[in-house]
Image (cartoon, rainbow, N blue to C red):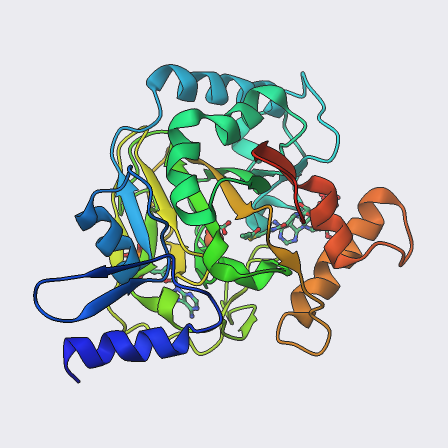
Length: 327
Ligand SMILES: CCCC(=O)SCCNC(=O)CCNC(=O)[C@H](O)C(C)(C)COP(=O)(O)OP(=O)(O)OC[C@H]1O[C@@H](n2cnc3c(N)ncnc32)[C@H](O)[C@@H]1OP(=O)(O)O
Ligand SMILES: Nc1ncnc2c1ncn2[C@@H]1O[C@H](COP(=O)(O)OP(=O)(O)OP(=O)(O)O)[C@@H](O)[C@H]1O
Ligand SMILES: O=C(O)CCC(=O)C(=O)O
Ligand SMILES: [Fe+2]
Ligand SMILES: [Mg+2]
């Protein structure tokens, strides 16, 4: 297929979203931007890179000073000096049944830190939001927050994160108005389990997800794409402290095991346009994750079956720029 025909195929596949901008190239075909807005920030090369690959890595975006502050706050949470409403402190499944020691060694992930003013500062950093706006437009909600402290692998490969599409977890659309920012809090590379992405998979559709059949076990809710094909071309995103990758929620990604003795730290936020809308996932491939989220949320808030999948998101989403129009 010629490049122009390939572009046309992409365009036809995406007619549910009005093109953000139309630009003519001298080579004689029209390129329709499907995934980015016309802002002054991204260079034409950066914009085309995201359009083609579904991610873009920005070097040195978050300052050392900010990252050191996030790390300090993380350590306070681990020592149980602060207790944040709604925040989930997760342990790796390999040590889930052992005694809790109040130390970062027992914590593999913090999830939902929207009520921690120090950690949530990450989601409002102007240097992050100006990139986010290129993908979501000006009304921006921070929907999902995580600080991932990937532990040294305990020998069962449970420190891996299976290949997945983040959209699997989200009952809101359109996908093209959602973006993740993921910032390395120290050097991350193949040895300590950097992000692994499958470029261009953001142009595909949402796939069926379930737990991978891994001998050593899998962490709660770490679903992977069904029938993952390990032969597909992968890119390992090696990053330095402060480097930030922005990626599309359909991009297939995961992370390898941590083969070092250190804890690999990253902080991330999933943003969506406040103009997005909730969908009902009943009868769709997302029913399995809805069921798990509802079970955990009912236990966490002591509510029987009253809490809906949509409620769990509307409740934790926070406006970080513009107007809360819909979500
Ligand atoms: C774009 C988004 C992508 C993602 O978000 S991917 C992954 C998201 N993962 C999650 O949201 C998981 C959230 N985690 C949680 O809700 C909690 O950590 C979890 C798993 C419910 C456990 O919390 P607690 O109940 O406070 O912990 P607990 O020590 O009392 O254990 C209760 C039972 O859960 C088990 N458990 C704890 N951590 C686990 C883990 N990492 N993987 C699998 N099972 C785990 C634990 O063994 C215990 O089981 P049992 O009831 O004794 O049989
Ligand atoms: N069956 C599977 N289903 C889903 N994801 C998988 C499966 N097998 C491996 N993965 C994921 O694929 C990604 C790459 O895995 P792999 O362990 O090969 O990478 P790596 O350790 O980063 O690279 P390498 O060991 O080659 O340096 C990781 O995110 C891993 O969790
Ligand atoms: O930091 C990682 O290892 C990847 C985490 C991730 O992709 C997720 O939680 O959705
Ligand atoms: Fe993810
Ligand atoms: Mg490997």
